[in-house]
Image 1 (tube, helix red, strand yellow):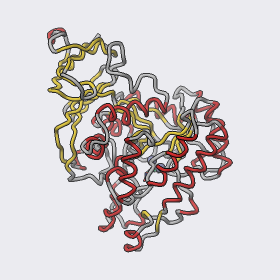
Image 2: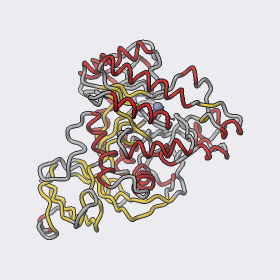
Image 3: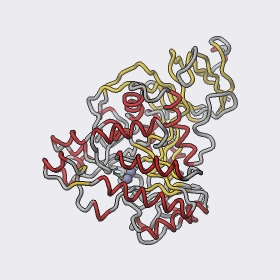
Image 4: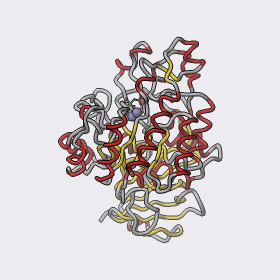
Length: 435
Ligand SMILES: NC(=O)N[C@@H](CC(=O)O)C(=O)O
Ligand SMILES: [Zn+2]
Ligand SMILES: [Zn+2]
């Protein structure tokens, strides 16, 4: 059994540094410096006071395989995840072919295991081909070797209320949930940017806030009526936070959860001025007041967690005019830095809170028993070590993804991943992946 000794780390950023001994896949113990003899370990990682957190869990990742391996693959996306501190990711279903059947989800899960850098959980499509017309074989995907529990048509909204109702009913019978991309399509025909002064000035067709908020309100009501579990993807407006706060206060039972992306915590539509498609994303970058409201909603638990919506695109799909460019931005390797910048440095979250929004809550929402666990004896060794003081300049070209579409290129971000451990195995260390 391999033994890895993590020296001088601070679980959840609190207290004096301790040593953590990992044996095989499990945390064998924690104790004051010197309790475990480094000579007995196969590998020693010097934490130097790094914050130790449970490995991050991303409920919303686009890995592009099968179909668009020129933008990302399960191999490159897994590397980006490990480097970003993630030990589990949920791979969205909008691949080509769509992950709307057992064959595709089993393929994605198998590729993820072969790569072995992060647990890759395939998301199953809600409707056949993401077309929104007919429910996909949800039971077959749930019963497959991939054991799908999270279902989503992400990229598209399950806009037909009857289909959404049935999806909530079926997925709850399967012990799963629907992750909704909330976008009323009739309100976003040809939409290019947040409907506000910036879009008006630039002549871009607007994506109005109520297109998101009306679907969230509707789906909360449908969740309440059916007892089905709803997870709201990439919440982007202050009004959405208000609706979630109202519904969560009203409806006991916690059947509705929500995520916010790092980019919606940091960026606004003032980035639109240069017409650089790297800033094009769905839902769009919104206004200052939305960013402020989203940070507060994440801090107070109205929004449960951070999910990256990591959306790599090939150069030819981004290096073109704004209207033709695909929406989406890279996220896996910059998520932590943005959470530190927007939530920790602002005093809105402490490191316990970071563990909650990047690991514990997403693991609970998806029902992962071995993720988001305490850093304690007997627990699975899914751990990330973070240097809280380090600052790094993002270089798109240096990221592990194939796509280069990071809007954070050139930005200085705080918080560096020192090492990531997946079931006791070091998957990333000092910026290098370990295959
Ligand atoms: N977020 C995006 O702008 N794009 C996503 C789809 C999505 O998350 O809706 C993609 O697949 O590229
Ligand atoms: Zn989406
Ligand atoms: Zn997405």
